[in-house]
Structure formats: C-alpha cells, structure tokens
Length: 260
Image (cartoon, rainbow, N blue to C red):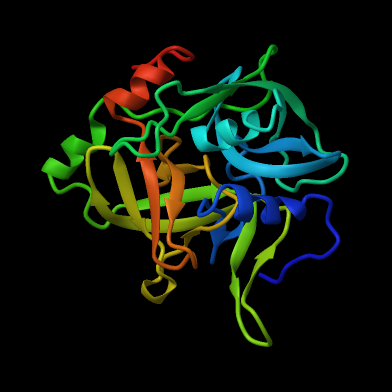
C-alpha cells in the first residue's frame, strides 16, 4: 500500500491530523472496489481546496451517517455546505452530492457517552445504492450476554490514510484516494463503545487518520454495528467505535430515519 502522489484530495490527511486527531482511516486493508457502494466520503471546500474530511454511510435514500466531531469541526469554520461522493476512487471528476449537516445537539466529548453521531441529508434520494441497515435496540448487549461477540469479525470501510510508513526519517502515513476495507475483531464492549482490535500482529486490520464516521459492519452483513470515532495514535492497536444500538444513538437517529 504505497502512497499515491499528486492526487487532489491528499491535503485531507494533513487537515484531519491537525483538526480532528486522533480520528481514523483504513490500515492493512485492501481496496474495496464495488463491495460497499453505500459507504461514501464527506468532502469539504476549505480555503478554495476540496478535501476528503471524513467517511460515512448511506442509511436511507436521503440520509448519510457520519460522526458529530466531523460536522461540528466543519461548522466551527463557518462552513454550511458539504458534499458526499460514493465513488470508490475520489477523483476530480467524481460525482458529488450536496448535503446539509445535522450535528447531534447532545454531542459532548467529555461525557462517557459523547453522542458523537451526525447525519448529512440530501434533498433528492440517492439512486442505485442500497442503504445500510442499523442494529436493533440493545442488540450487542444481548449478544454479549450470550458470549456471541467472542471472535466476531467487523468490517471497517473508509477513505483516507494508510498504515504508518517507517524508515528513512520521520514516520509518515501513506495516503491515496480509494475506498478501502479491513477486518477487525471484537475486543470489548461497554455502554457506549465497541472496541475492535486492529493489531496486525494478530492478523487484524482497521482504521487510522481520516476515516472518522465510517462504518464498522457486523461481519459480512449490511448492518452497521458502530461508527469509527478514535483510536491509538499510531493506528496499530484499537479502533474505538460508537455503538449504534444504544438509546443515545437511537434518540438522535430516529429524528432522521425510521428505526426497527
């Protein structure tokens, strides 16, 4: 996974490192191609340059799920218009959809459950893409009670930086403009968080800078278990993700989509 040079979206990596660290992107994974067409990139125009800012998932024909710290950061800069692209490779001619941000009003990083969830809505339905499904209320508490999460795989999908490159100077994070996919395994569960191992030494892969808001699918299903929020600084140990089956997440989501 060598970095690709001179691509128009590469400034996103720098922007994310400075403004939203330690948010995430795919490490030790593979190009997705057409595997997860409902996963898209949140694009923002900052000082005349378009940047891939975060990732997210289509959860209804007009609603795109991402993280609150992504939208809140953009709004703090006085920006109200964002775009979403579902192209598997971000290019200058990629299709962009104009969206409106809705940050969870209860978002607070200092809380044990930060409510780090947001949506971007579209005025017209997105055609030709099947939205992802959301988990049922308390789904992962029930699985944990039955020991059903032990060894469970989760599929992280997103755009942005690659794993850290070392040797020949200061370590850097590789980058390209492709949607990528990686397989993580269950580590721990609490009332707000689903922690996923992404340690390559144990065969796991995961996320790193630039992929906040992206989905972690429950195995090979179309159900999003959680969204990527944070992790360790060198992107080799843990993907800390926000559960979508909690009352906090569902109270926000039900304002925008029908829950089951």
